[in-house]
Length: 277
Image 1 (cartoon, one colour):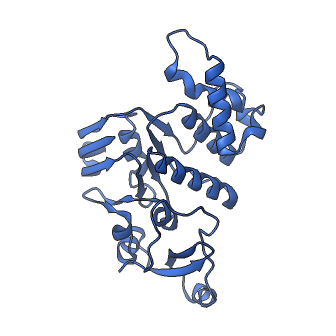
Image 2: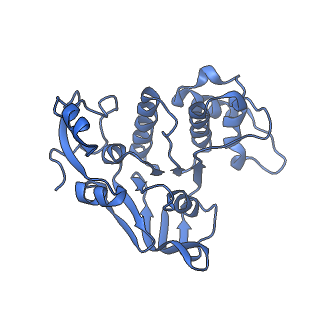
Image 3: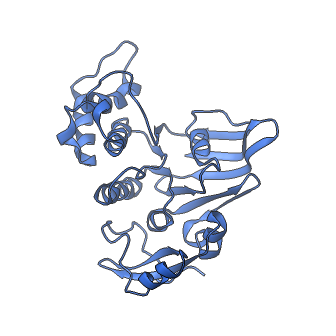
């Protein structure tokens, strides 16, 4: 539903962020974008969402796209309910106002994200995590076929991380295309069908997440030795990523490892049974 071909972007004449990127965000699939800070992950997302024009290449979207930023501030003291209701704007005629059906869909979005209890609160007074949940609900209310999210769980506690990642799984299973950036390879392994690794301006790797997110590639991506391991959890074996943090970490890691994603719902696609090579 989003096709990017030969995508490249630069901020100055001699400073390319990335070049030659070919990527597809497909219906019913999750695409995860990973990379260190400052490598252009958010820029890539904005290009895919149609919010900015690339320096070179093309982006084509065959369905409406909803964008959820990592951070956002409102100019006025809107309530959470009103912020979510704004997601219905694209369905209104010029100078139109939301009707009963629009309010019903906004209420359903609040409930699905689990923030109905916040409906009357001022958006400006929310924590960063609460604002993120509100923006996800707004994107749901928009009823777009593709959802593009920049670090959707970065400000959330463990419980709400599980809630959001499970919701994204459910949306993909229902046929939506999901694109997200994340600093958590575990989340990408658990959730994503496809992945993009942004290592440098001329080194952007795209492929199936299960094959691309191996220890060697992730170690190269973050400049830190990592290993992958299979851990047992309540929902069966899962692959986790373990960074090498030195002897103190090694001593802790010698104990049975907890399942870092055991609170999440089962994958739409079966979890791998062996660690990637």
